[in-house]
Length: 342
Image (cartoon, rainbow, N blue to C red; front, side, top):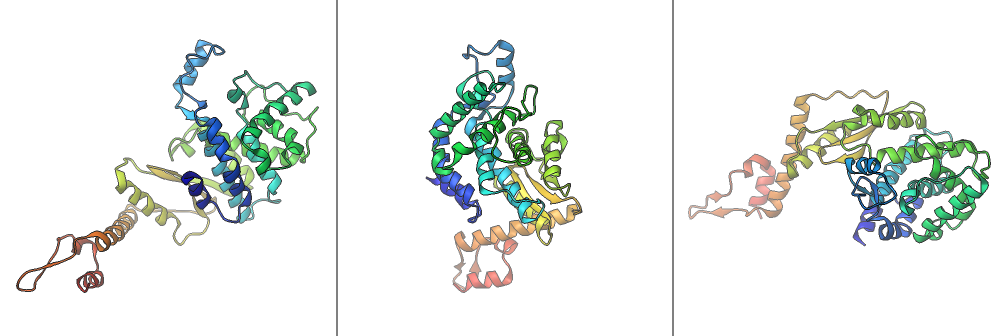
């Protein structure tokens, strides 16, 4: 399947957990959750919701459950890999912890998936019922191929499921819970789940990462996870104009990152890019640098297109070469001579 191959190519070949998740679970997620609404959408026929709740749903941009799941997981795993590569975590996340995080975030909206009002965990019976509900949904997506030992960590997963969102009614105390992972690690995994939930929906544009009040939690969690060493930055274009915008964005990425350590492109939009960078790194870019970089990027692309697809040369009876005038706009003298010699 093209989509799975595309995702695999974007993942580090040494990231076996993510590759296994793509191969074994995403096909099931696509089958069961691609048309299930996570945010927004039309809920007018849902008898369980009152009119006020229906209006709140309709006011939000629509997002399928599958999109919400994947848009949260992949940026978070990218962050985890970055933190570990830069040695900003005391203890790297184990394969089991990564698997527990992935499964927990996948099910953080399990109440929406099965269409119930909340998930009760006030008693042991409630917890067992919640575990059964989570396990049933995970098995639909072939969880046991991805994480054969998931049942041993089902209580950890369920605890994280019901505590991902920062809202009234979350049950953070661990009394009655029989967790396998240390509580300190559970708290870190919970922050990863919360981060995923926020980044999947609350960042509609590059500027939102710093300018929207709703995204402040992302900045806080990034600071917590990186020992206050990493921050967000962004560039954003005022207008989107087709393929030219892509050229500008790529030029800006090169301008920000070439020759600099400590800054990484992170989230990509049609009108810009969100970066993660070291707090100590100062980046100052002038308008002249932007113009020069974009011009150079555009010239390289146009020169490549001319060499590959341009009509070439015609010659008059006097032997004078004829060609479109734009050849000299984008080709160097050496490139022009190479084309002439073909």
